[in-house]
Image 1 (cartoon, rainbow, N blue to C red):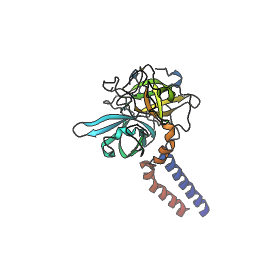
Image 2 (tube, rainbow, N blue to C red):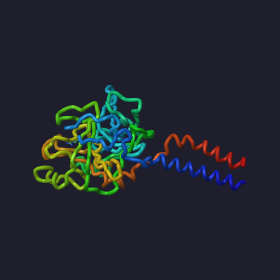
Image 3 (cartoon, rainbow, N blue to C red):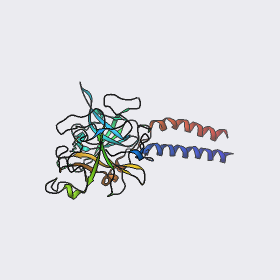
Image 4 (cartoon, rainbow, N blue to C red):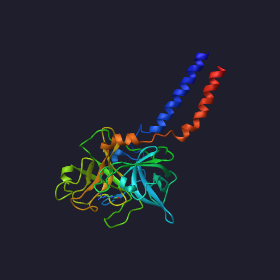
Length: 308
Ligand code: ARG
């Protein structure tokens, strides 16, 4: 009898451990869009158009608090686990204090939140220690949310690439940033399809002239019609991989010479090169739900042990 009880107790402990590891990473399923029909996605910021509700369930608006003004959208971001948002390091150059920031998830119109929109305060901001504000090298940062979010039709994490791929198609950018170089942002999330160019093309003397490194991706349009702009930074450059039916975060919106200028496409952080940095800086947190269940598990386990 005691043996049986021990077994039950072991099982319960095992289940508890599973629950905790599962909720901690929350990365089992990534890069899918429950509300979109991928077969029907047509090709089509600067040169963009309104996204559909639920189009980019990992897109985050990172907002900064100013006394008297309230929260203000400053940058985009991508949800990569249920408590982590990946963004650009230059987004926090004004203020690295997590207390001033919030992440708004599942938002379409910046001023009209839906019942499924989630606002989360930030517990930690981790900026790459080798970020260089002159060259934009290592322009990457992680926001850890105070409380995790639950995945649903409107909230999903995007996949982080494990290895380099050359065939990137189709790829998209999204954000609430300016629609003209000297313009203003949009309240409704914009999206655009972009081409990814070989680095050496963007590094030519009549383009970025050797300023781009292997840690960057060059994407947009060579004629300058489609691009990201101020306010889109930190947001995703994402590509769909038909073989696995998932979206991968290929880049993080980082910089550009102006916006939408011919021969000067947008420059993005090459996320694949930061896979290890990201993994090493994820702040694994057991979720509130599983923590709440711990005492109950123990009570059940002990009762089973002593009564049987
Ligand atoms: N640095 C800009 C920002 O803070 C984004 C620039 C992207 N520029 C471009 N031409 N693609 O929002």
